[in-house]
Length: 262
Image (cartoon, rainbow, N blue to C red; front, side, top):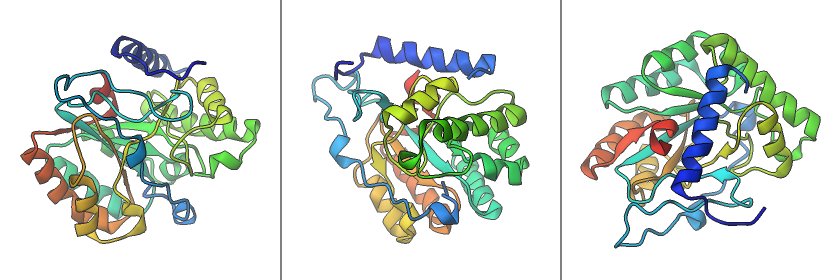
């Protein structure tokens, strides 16, 4: 495969395939054991928008253009994405702050977390948010062989399908900010055409405090970004009001991944 940016028409085609797969049913705060897999910030992969062409189709990130890391540069929206697992009370705190701020988000849910409390899936869907697949056990996917990687994706897809009726339109690998050929093959086998990563890392999983999380997001955020956040970290709950206020001041709408890319 040639390493070239996908145009808007091609990207929307892939999004349509993902949505169709979800409709047909084909297809962090990270758990405590997984918080050690600290994904690096993605500032080096952030696209540069030409001042004269603010709606230029966004380029694609690493791994031969297989991962979606951002939407259209200069758009009026950003996608807030949460790695989904952690204490129920914190997850519901984040849900409440999103509701108060009129924001929508995508939660990449860990299947075992959903199994432990199925009501959380309904709560996020009822709040106007969307759920994606973040594997079943949140293992470091780069260390998995093909069979185990495929099982991790398919098990979570099955949980999502059972609880929500679809496996979700999107997949994000666990324990790594970007995919590999093995990971991509596992995702495609479960019905996800490509993987979703991010280009703005809040670093909230390092628990630096609410002020630092807010600064990490607002100091560089721009239209088209996909922002990485986590459920299960109290600092993220505390940071959300200021983040949402800051986005509004910049005329940026917090949306789901599907809303950002369509």
